[in-house]
Image (tube, rainbow, N blue to C red):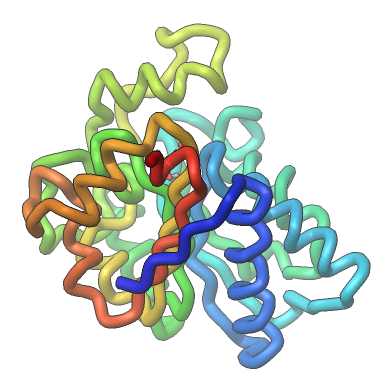
Length: 240
Ligand code: F6R
């Protein structure tokens, strides 16, 4: 893993954006793997700004998001489809039909998971995957204990994850209990990965990632076995 330490969240967002922009300009048909949550908001702002001022085009880019809450439809403001539209897709020239976010409200979640995994494989897999990390080491919504062999599946969210994400909802009772998430094996098939780590609440997770061993109880640890991972961490996450 390559580690880039930066001063601030702003720098973290700009550094990740530069890497994405460079990739899209070099390979216009890039398949991006995208994350939601608080961490990538600044990255998406930078991509939008660059699209508007620098002209980087996403016309031929396609994207696959990591996860979606079970039970939420794409027009629910708390859904990850809505998040992606609001923060990125509505503001760049990507075709909506090339953007993929798991559907949280299908009749048959298992079937949908398989279809999502198959579609991603058909499209040649993710070229560049953006990841955040949970305080418990989750990547996607793969909570501690998830098999490293897992593919896209329905997962149960830990109470601590629901508590951490309650900040986006009116109350914790509204946070869904389950999600659809790309699996660890799915994520590991990405050709290149950027892991963004920001803030004091991620300090322990970052230390565990850098110093701990590869273990299913700390899902992000598997990234150490990937040949092309860049971890970008801000000062608050790195600590003294
Ligand atoms: C989001 C995702 C999660 C988040 C993680 C950190 O699509 O897959 O793994 O990256 O929960 O969330 P934030 O950035 O809100 O701290």
